[in-house]
Length: 344
Image (cartoon, rainbow, N blue to C red; front, side, top):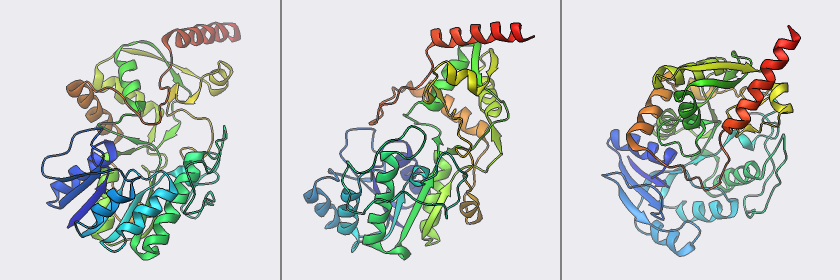
């Protein structure tokens, strides 16, 4: 199998390339060469996807069974890239997001849930950010999906919509923050209730599923998440304590206390969000055709090993403030303990 990966050196792209090489595929990558290292065995092509001449040069130098696009964010650019590749690639696998759904994170989702409207040729300014609903990122990704379908047609297009992706080489810093915080021990603020369901997908499982859709020649859209209800927040932090050897004293603090204290959801406490639909993404369609999700503890363990072995620095192209300041954490814990004593 001949595979082209747009990206290919960071997190999802790295996992896709590594998995394809393990399968014995011929892999070509296309990127600027500014972030991450090329894996041994790939045919690395340098270029900028925003430059038509670079993309045209890429298209003129090969033919591939499939392309996996891990770096498409602007619809107009994705349309240009897809049209340039349409005659030299058989299938286009586009990495999208659950943020394309109009009702995420408020309502439970299936692949039939309403999608944000965005033209295939929209520029980077299309869409708006709202505090509890649609984001420009979601609008843009929806437009990118439309762009790929326009260039390749429905039967040659596969769209993957993951929620939160965790695992080794994660550069957003969500799981790394929890691992480091819990490893340091002491009183640790955790959002109650412990049984809150979460469904992150391991980056390697996402990569394996992406390649399986190519093998099976599957088109259409797939939510790519762990099963609803399989893992909880208690499982997450418990696994962090287990693999790091830390001795945390977990204090479970209710949502209303955290929001009243001004804790930013999703960022100051990674993976915490109060909206009812955030962890209610139905991925049974993907599971029925090959998506297999490893236990959460395995993802946590392998991420910790990667952190210890590589000592990476986070460098996200869309900067995020990840993690709760220790002084703010202590203040909330003191106030919560005082109110709990008063209530009793």
